[in-house]
Amino acid sequence: MTQLSSQLIRKDLDEATLISLAKNGNTSAFEKLIKRYEEKIYSLAYRILQDKEEAFDVLQDTAMSAFKNLKNFQSKSSFSTWIYRIALNFALMRKRKQKAQLKKAQIIDSEDSDKLPQFAEIAEQNLLGNYVDWSENPVISLENQELRKVLQEAINKLPDKYRNVIILKEIEGRSIEETAKILGLSISAVKTRLHRARLYLKWFLEKYITKGQMV
Image 1 (cartoon, rainbow, N blue to C red):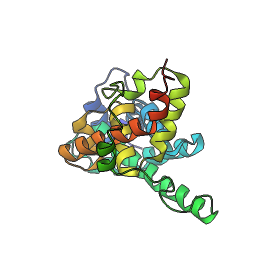
Image 2 (cartoon, helix red, strand yellow; image 1 turned 45 degrees about the vertical axis):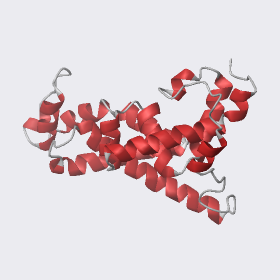
Image 3 (tube, one colour; image 1 turned 135 degrees about the vertical axis):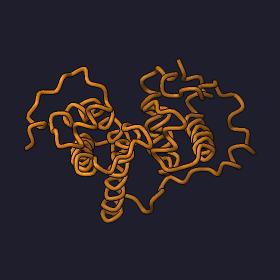
C-alpha cells in the first residue's frame, strides 16, 4: 500500500478528488466514494430483484467491479451514471438467472407469462379515458398502501425494457438524460418507453381506479 493510501481522508472532499485519490490506490478514498452511493445502488437492485440478499450481492459485486475498473472511468459521464450502469448490469444478470430458475421449476411457462396488451390495443379501447392523471410521478401520487402494492406487482409484470425505465426514472428519480446514459439508449427511446410503460401501468390499475377504490 502506498503512502497516499495510508492517509486519512477528510469527509468533506469533493467527488472528483476522491476519484483521483482512489485511482492512485487510496482505498479509504474509494470506500468513502462508494459509501455515497451504496443506498441507491441497493435500492435499484432491490427494485429489480425484489430480494434483499440478491440486492446486497449486487451491491457487493458493483463495489468490487468499480474498484477494479476505476482506472477506466474517464469522467465522460458522471460517476453516478457510471456506477449505476454497473449495478444495473449485475442486477439484470441476476434477474435473468431468477427467470431461468423459475422456468426450470416450471413455475412460469415463458419469459412473459402474463401477456401485456399491445400499445395500440390500449389506445383503441380508450382504456385511459377516465383515469386520474398521475403520470408526473405515479409512485408518489399513489399514497394508498394497497395501490402501492398493486402498482409494484404491475411494475414486476412489465417487460424488462419498460420496467427498467420506470424504475430508474419514476422510482429512483433519475433524469431522462441520465436514464438514457445508464441504459445506453437515446433520449427519444427513453421517452417512448416511459410513455408506454405509464400506459401499461394505468391499464393494470384500471379496475382499482374505475371502481372508485382510490382514496
